[in-house]
Image (tube, rainbow, N blue to C red; front, side, top):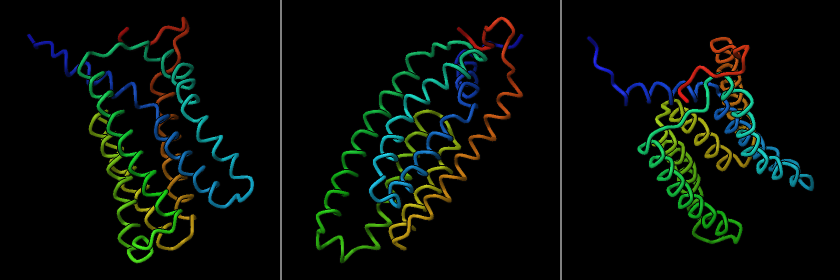
Length: 199
């Protein structure tokens, strides 16, 4: 008789819950919005507003698309702790990034002298952020997303051209859309509105 592995069942449920591609689409659209902000001049505030709207939009999409199919899943204390650790780490990383951007805007001499190194550092920092998401949320595909977005940001800085952001954001968003399509086919919405997941 097979031994019931609750941790493995929870892991499978967690991964299934994030197979909808919505997180990928969020990151892809965020990168595209960053590109738009870089080229829109006086209308860049629209891109900034879109960035702030993406988080609530993700929560709404989860509620309307994922929950009816997978159920309202309550994960264990370990998963919740990993999410808290991720939030703390990303907050610290965001503060460091903002400090670096402020120094860039201020025209710090060492940044001009070390432009290549700083560009590589920013791209690596972005990869580290996505790697943290991949590790603490147990979503291996985020490593590849981080590698692509980090490379695009470095290329943008080195070339002084935001086009790599558009390319990377489009690839990530379209990949998320493909995942969403497969998710909808794999998990059709139950007639009674009840999900397939663990409640």
